[in-house]
Length: 314
Image: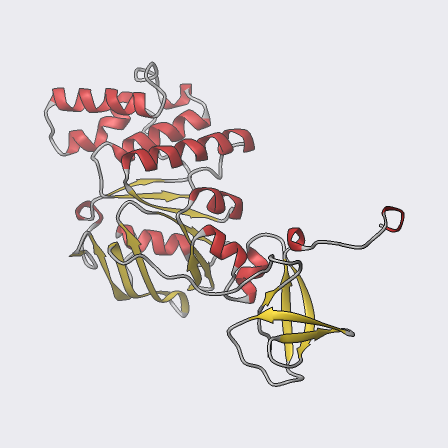
């Protein structure tokens, strides 16, 4: 049996593993969502609530189901089972055009034959909005994403970071209730990625739009999200705030995948204590184990404090 505990490494410092509670009033509600591709189950019984105005990251390794879940929410990939509600409306069988979302893809997906201004205006034109309204909205969005002078250029004339800003402005043009971001920063170099993730988070807070972002980058998720949904093999391993995910992983997978963690094999001693070699350590966990039962302790390197060691012996 392998159990993960709260391992106290220094006075007042410990690692606690526990699950997180979701928001009370969801803007997005997913229940029992399952998606199969032949004999392969990509998603299995997914339950998820996302509050209005929340920024949520789907985090996990390649093939864990995070993009499949995003596409199911968008209606781009129909689920085999389950229910999806957006803004209190059941959209489980609704086409993408009726789901009130904007989406940004990793590849930007800009129209190369249209100017920046026309790319941003695309959704508004399709909705037959008045020309004056479209022009005003596009000008507003160009300023919002920091490209006020780039409206007459074509995508090929822009850098990768600028193209991603245009894609973001296009997704926001129709004022959607839900913004979906499918690994929007993964194609950018490290410096641009860091800068743009700060811009996206600031913009999301300013607009208050409910946002879901898919990423495999744990640092990105920890820095940007209000809550993180950690996925593996088509199921949700844990949902919680970044601090909770990092400090209180609910499973060995989450502990190992998020951040750096060392593991120690131990055995249960008396109540609240485990034995590692000849030493006993106090732990906190939600499992009751019989003395002698094998356990696994997770230890973050930064939680360790070394005391009583002379400098020359260190």
